[in-house]
Length: 138
Image 1 (cartoon, rainbow, N blue to C red):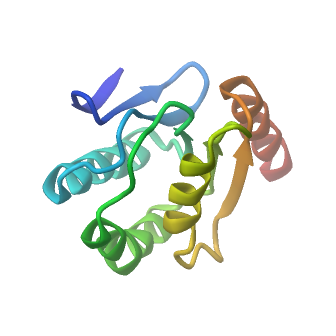
Image 2 (cartoon, rainbow, N blue to C red):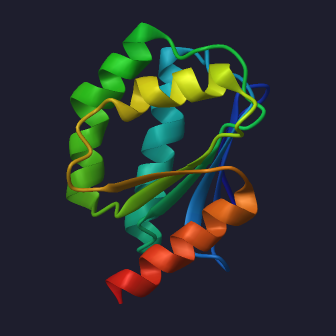
C-alpha cells in the first residue's frame, strides 16, 4: 500500500505481507516539506500497523539530502521514531554507488542508539536482514 509519493524523489509503502515500511529513493534532494511529509507518513504507518521496521532502498538514488532535511531528521524525527518503537532500518546501498554510501552515512550519523541500523547490498538481502532481526526479537 502506498503511504506517500513525491514523483521523481521517493515512494513510501507499507509492505504488509513482508512486515516493513519501504522507502524507495530516486533523488535525495527532496524539498524539506516533502521530506517531512514522507517521514511523518511513514511514522504514522509504523504506529497504525504496528510495523517497526524500515527498508530504505537507496540503490538508484542520486544527489544528496538538503542540510535542513538532515537537521530536521536528527533534531526532531529520530526522537519520534524512538517513541514510536521503530526497531530497525535496513538500507540498500550497492557497493558500486559511492554517492549513495555518502548520503547514507550523512543521515545515519544521527543518534540511533536505540535502533538497529544495518546496510545491505540488495533488496533481497535487506528483507532477509529484517526477517533475522524479527526472529531475534521474538
